[in-house]
Amino acid sequence: MADIDFSLLDVPRSIPIDDPEAYLRAAIAWHFGEETGSAFWLRAAKTLDFDPLTDVTTFTDLRLFPNLLTELRNVPVEDLIPRGYGSPPPVPQVFESSGTTGAPKRTAQLPDWVAQVTEWQTEDFATGGFVRGQGFLCLMPSGPHGVSYFSRRVSERLGAAFHAIDIDPRWVKKIAARNAVAEVAAYLDHVLEQATRVLQTQNVANLHATPPMLEAIARNDDLVDLVNAKIRYLLLSGAHVDADTLDLLRDIFPNTAITMAFGSTMILSQAVTRVADDDAFVFDPRTPYVVFWVIDPETGEQVPYGELGQVVMNHISKGMFLPNNLERDVAIRIPGPLPHLSDSVSAVRPVATFEGEAVIEGVY
Image (cartoon, rainbow, N blue to C red; front, side, top):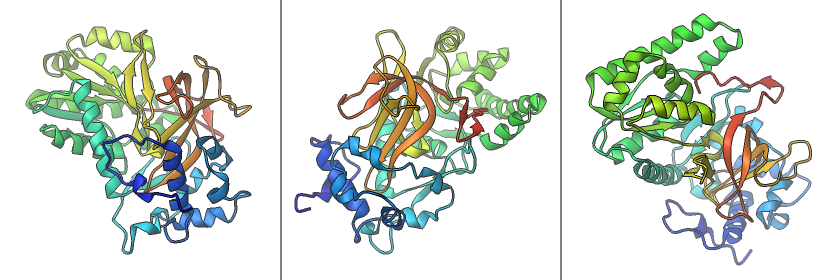
């Protein structure tokens, strides 16, 4: 353990990690060391049939871990904070998943990681075409969800007044699950009414929305006119959109730069978006903090490049360690930024069922 350098784990960091496996060794030593690990992982280590401190030396070895993320539905967030942060520890930002397949899962994001994600997203927004100094309308969930929190922070960084709306994706999923079509439509109208008031009265040029929300806007001629008159940067995230629908949306909103983001509460961030030669969006994880594998769920083996498989996500940072998480998304496997380390993904969409439950996206 003498070659462990915990400073590799410090964030925010602008310089890339030169040695990803040295980073991984430091992260494993941190999360499973008695003096530095969290109560959650120190307890979990006693139930494993291997020793992370000696048996996990490469990113492939992360496959040894069972997927324990369902426990994040019930574990106290204090148990997720590594002891190495000191006593008292920093106060975390607690974010929850949308609860698509059951009770929400919680993450505890510490100030150092929040600062890192804010820097990354500020860069992503700026390079994607965000109009600095112009207002930002965010049609995304707030409350326990991280997406609105980070959008607000980034908006401030880019000199834009932030305009939020109320949206509860869990309620939409509940009414959609019982096929209450009229109630879903009424809820969408409620959200669009809020958006309309901002678009009519405020100086906004930037919009963050889910694909279902933008599709609802596209069906309303008055809102289409408002968006075309004002919005010049449009970020889509939170639900999938197919290529044909995306092309149609570009035709409806020809004056707006439309881009996409792909992230997850369970990776505590979002991937880097790039456009492939065929104009498809490709999402590159920020290695070594996040690693994707696209696998055949029946065999657990990675599918060939260009083929569809289910996404496995790994998050490895100083603040949290969430390995070998089989997600509810399928995607096309693309060579990653470091192909030996991670896959990238394209054409992401949800599976039909996950953990025995039907997957309902609703509006998020």
